[in-house]
Length: 63
Image (cartoon, rainbow, N blue to C red):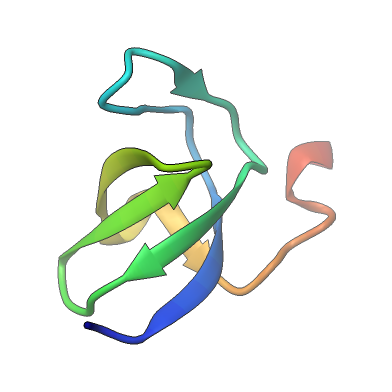
């Protein structure tokens, strides 16, 4: 299993369930490189490098 880390969405991203998660949502990120697997409460979000930041950014939703 790949190492997991937390990230924060920088843009709205749709999950496999059809739910779109807003900017500032905390995601669990697995993998490295240009695309990674993101998860929010078990919902899978295929993420590109520009859609999230590593770590938690509590102020990102205020931008």
